[in-house]
Length: 384
Image 1: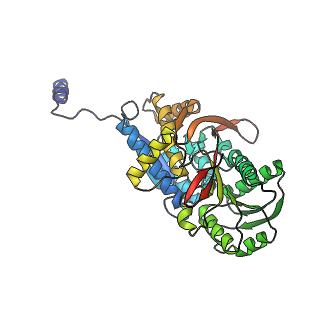
Image 2: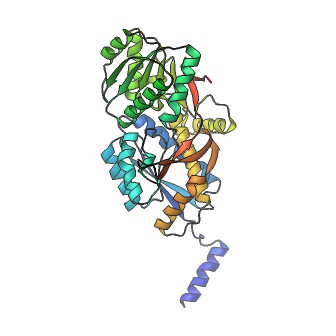
Image 3: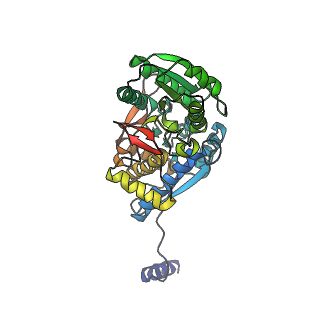
């Protein structure tokens, strides 16, 4: 009788009277700062992921299966990032986790993923040492160590700068790593530093440091900061008469600088990134048009890197055969990712393997060439 019942159900499904079985969903975790001081980055990243997933699913998904995002707000806080990673990996049982937004949080949360043998994929973390955590840690955000030397070299070639002052946040993994890489690049290129000043997260008044910097007559200000402090620093620099070029890192590469540093204060900011809104490559043009169509505003680097990261993960997923055994499927994805090559909004991309502190193979960094741009009248202009 059971057999007859099953045959009847199958016949009804074939006839279209009952729906056929749904394809399996592929749950992917997204841990980003959607509130707090880093929300301007996290919201862009989430939007980039959502746009890519909609496109991938509309084109047939992953061999017929749909990607479903499980999005959590890690608030830009280390402790919350750890909690969110644990929830996504052990409770929601996602296949992999994207995020978190800040390097500080990645240093704290990625060991959770490594211990659980689950891929953690950063799209905005550029500080040194993150991928040395282990072989389940990936990122497509180009490190400051790769970008900053090219940025400084371009500014030197274009403006003739001979000496610089340095200002950096001394209480954040990202901004301290940025400072270390700026210092090395300046030493390597034999550019003297007139003075080095610091600030902390949450500071709002930088005029004392900027006035001291102005008194040393630098040809440029090297700034390792996140946007929350970096934008007011640019405004106050102009207010004290420090009208020199500002050389920024990854944290300053956002179109939101034009909203936060108005009245021309955002001009003459130099940044390096694999992505530029002015890059006319067809893959980037397609992304920008799709992003504007969905969200009505322009994308930034963080949206572009998230968008590409989802497509990179999709290529690896298409190359794996999921068995339903979550641990085995997580391992299969990890094994497939390193060989993925992709040309997207950020250009041609591939991974290169990082090493841990002992020099042994660890996780995977991005291998991409940066584009150097400068801000002029509300736009980033490519200056190669």
